Image (tube, rainbow, N blue to C red; front, side):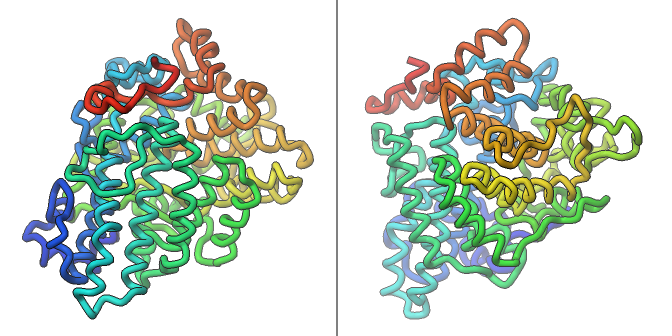
Length: 509
């Protein structure tokens, strides 16, 4: 399988300067701060920025490996899906994954390690610290070029911190490079609100200097553009219930005319997922066979691997109900999400209507961070709370029509009164579940909804998790998630041992 990515052909010459290996994961240096003497010319700056992107896909591509250096995409899936209602444990799933699905999450669970995120943050901090020195050393580097590179790196760092904040709440905020990727200088945690304020500030700066396009589609999907920044801004504003600013950020993308919904026909799966870099895509972690770097999903989902995670039985028939009149009429997303026969999570390793899968060495599908459909649903959710319900409903209808959404009375949610924000927003949440199933969104959607008017809205989360957990723990979980501190993961025990300034998250003390 071959797909375009940011490493071809723009950075080929850069990689040849830096290393003889074709992997961009071997960029100098492999770990630790890039020392000041390294920053001599534009080519070295470019290679360092490539390294920041490479860090997003670096790591062990196996959920069975307890190594802290697991891939970021694996953590994003685990943190964003396992605690929610769409994933089931296989009969021999890993104990750590099984415990997360059942809400039994302890600080010794290997899946709560955050090393890979701070590794990327440290690479970004290093570039932000030393890149400006190149301007005085290489006259071919212009201020505009420098600022565009810095905008990319600020955005990557902001994305990493937003992922950490949503997963853990308060976390250490390091804005200076450290001697080692895993060293956060024995920092105490910063408040979630302070981190969000910092990344909003950084994104506003980055937006002024980022490019609209690199002139090549693969780069526009795999590198940060102004639209990547706008998508992340919209996500953060929705997380903080700043609906008006969320709408402004969404409109910058919608009004650009640069994106559109991919037609929901027989080519939809290949265009959006198997090939990647579609017209709908805004930002993706790009995997490509030429890098020999595979994504982590084959060992997570393959039926031939004993650790495979499965789609919950309610996905087919509940979330995606069968048409009671015409069995051949179905939502285009149904077979993409999960195999009807064996509950395999098809989206990342399979094919619709087939038991065929990629192999362990051809698992190159990109991890999609943002696509245009999400911008429409971001805006719809924000509109539902600012008396623009009819507009919100029209945006949802666009998504449903593209997908050929199947409505079945008694199973599907009825179309709501557009003047009822609660009913309308719940309807949007239901559609987000179908549209972004297994894309690392579900848990964070549930938490965002549950926090909005807590405890009055806690039922949104507790109803979902009670469906997925085993019967023996359902009532315990309903009680657990009446405490909003339980929405967040515990800090991994080893981090507490290494950093005496860190304290465990409140629920796990």
